[in-house]
Image 1 (cartoon, one colour):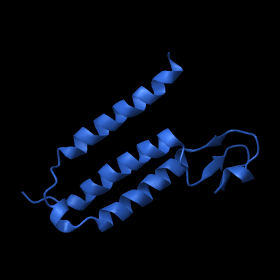
Image 2 (cartoon, rainbow, N blue to C red; image 1 turned 90 degrees about the horizontal axis):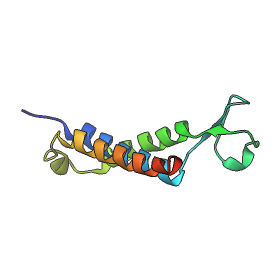
Image 3 (cartoon, rainbow, N blue to C red; image 1 turned 45 degrees about the vertical axis):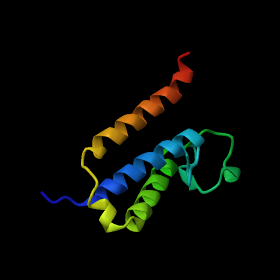
Length: 104
């Protein structure tokens, strides 16, 4: 059975980058809820809370696409589709461990 490795590489890279962006608060943009506007830097924003999820997601999609485009085809052909389950489970557990600070 032939499978395409580029979507696997994209998914794995996007998962890793999203988790890192979440953990280290790397955000390409911020959505200011009170003003219904997107901002590219935190300096422009007022003191009201902003939504970072859009920035984390956009960073993950861009990085995943770039990494999937750069990785050679000979490497992607050897990737197992099982990685599509293992890596996200590990990253979800990592995020849950990070969030335990709210409950301890």
